[in-house]
Structures are given as C-alpha cells and as structure tokens.
Length: 407
Ligand code: PMP
Image 1 (tube, rainbow, N blue to C red):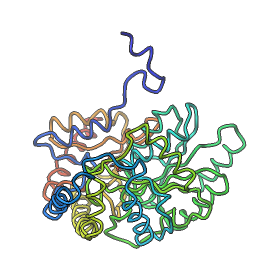
Image 2: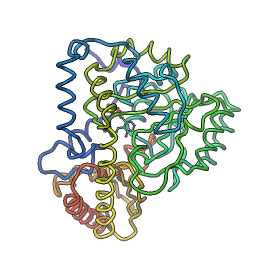
Image 3: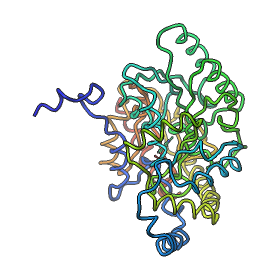
C-alpha cells in the first residue's frame, strides 16, 4: 500500500513529532526534565479531588458515565460564564461557551471552521508548538510577528496587516498567547493589548486569545484579557482546566460570539461528539467547592519558588552571554544562548539526554520556519528547586562544552 501517495499534502513527508517527543522525554526514568509544560505533581489536590470524584460517582454516576451535550453541560457553561466575569472581567452569556476536550481541541475546531489550504494565519514568534502544528496541519501558512520582552511587537503586526489587506492573502486569524507566553514567558503590555484588539477590529481579522497560563501570576500586576477589551466581537478566547486543575481531565473551553459558537458545536459533533462527562462534572464540582482557587493560589507559590531556582541556576551555570526573560507567571523560561556557528539545540538534545540526563525543548519547535537554533525552552513547573539547580548545572556544563567545542 503506497500510503504517502494518498495522504493530504500537509501530512506527506516526515511527520512532526515534537509534542510526542516532549511527552516521551518527560517520562524517561532518571532524566531531570525541563521539557513538558506539566503542572508539578505536588500541585494536584488529590485528597479533595478524590472525595469529589467518589461523591459524583455515588450521587450522579449514571450521568458521569453517559454521553453529554455536545456544547458541554449547561451547569458548567454557566459556571464558566460566571468565572470569566469574576476572574477576567469578561461579561458573556453561557451560550457563548463551548466546552472542549482541552484548549488544543478548541483551537483545532476553530481551524476546522476557518482554514483552507493556503490560508494565512498570523502568530507571534516564537509560539506554542501545539498551535503551530495544528494550524499547519490544515495546510495554512503561518506569518510570524517577532516578539520582545513585552510580547508580540504589535507595531510590526500593524504594518503586516496593512500590507496583507491590499493583497488577496487576508489573514484568517491572529493567534496569540498574551500572558506568560509559551514558550517565551513574556506578557504582552497593556498598551499593546489595546492596540492589538483595535487592529483586529479595524481589519476584521479574528484574534484567538490563548489564556492557558493567565491565572498563574506570581509577580507583577494584572493586565486585562484581550477578551475584556473586545468591543467588536473579534476575540475568540481559549481557556483550559489543564494548568489550574488537571491536564489529565482533557477539558477546556472556547468563548465566541453565539453565531460562531454554533459552528464550533457543529464541528465538535464530528470530532468527539462531546467532552468527557466525568471530567466536566469533576471540574464543575472542584470549581464550586473552591478547590480550583486553592490550587491556583498554592501553584503560584510553588511556581514562584521554581522560577527563582531556574533564574539562579541559569545565572550560576550557563555560559556568559546567555539571555532569558524573567517570567512573572506561568511555567516557562526561554533561553537564548550566545550565537555560535554550528550551535543547534535541536541536534544537541539527544546528546544532552543521553550524557547529562537532562531534557529541554529545542527552540526550533516554536517557530514555523525553522529558526531558534541557539534557543531552548525550559519548563520550571514540574521539577523541585533542588532538581532545577542540579538540572541547570548539568545543562550549563553541557552548553559550555558544546560552545567550547565549536558546537
Ligand atoms: N495553549 C498553550 C499555550 C499551552 O501551553 C497548552 C498546553 N501545553 C495548550 C494550549 C493546550 O492545553 P490543553 O491541555 O487544554 O489542550
């Protein structure tokens, strides 16, 4: 069977396995992993969650084990509409909420509704590997806008939108992770947020706001969500329970205008029919009982410690001339090594795992067009501060040697 001949163009050739590789590395015995964007095992509130789980199965077990509505349980959509108001200053109705099997499915559904092969999507660079892979899988072309310590350089976006609006390549949407970005850790400034939302409205280009880490602030002060600034209905908001409760539940949500929500529900029917009923009931009850709020608060304290350990380790052990952004929240530090000919963090990764028993994600994974050879993402959310010190020591030594050897 000649499979390659019948595959759609986006899947011909080598499949991108970056995410699967991150998952694999994070499981490898004895390796200190800075690879996965995983909540620390000590962030889960297991005794409280298991009590809730047991109660749901005892009192509402038939619903928990049954299919549910495609849009998600009404009670959860109502809870999320309330939470969006309380937490993010966003006034929405439950009818604008679609429950998804993770934020990544939310993005996938948006892509299915909006993208045809050859379409243009704008994203900040670097950007979340899972989003890039999803967008590219639909045959779309990613146009990248550079970032700095304040996130996407929105003035450059304005220039790009102006240029694209006069061509036939009007972008289908803009994808951004504005708060504690994956991978850079950077947060878009308030001034840039306003400009970004205004640009989306002015050009009639939807703005997908991925808020995966937005609640996990451990330093600095709050910034408004793009959705809360949105007067034109251009912002599609992606939320997830993955970082505030559990990624294993595979549960997220999309907030979109009702007419667009109807399309998302229609495509979700043919994707998985509905998200896990058990997960939805569990998340709802954990929310109602304050377990999520307690987890967020405790996670922020742990993340603050781990980010400090990461920063100290980088200072102490990494080669002179290494640069990184100090995050104010979230899971990640983005590291730029001194640029040296031949240095390629993607090529060096296997060696780092084999020789030093430490894992990271190579910079290249976070660009659509192969940049990032001297960059890497380090996740500090999972390892203990002691492992972060040891892991940065091993990795610092490894890169010192690689640079000395002419990489
Ligand atoms: N968006 C971003 C920016 C992420 O980092 C992640 C998870 N790594 C996701 C979305 C996917 O989240 P979920 O588990 O809800 O699919």
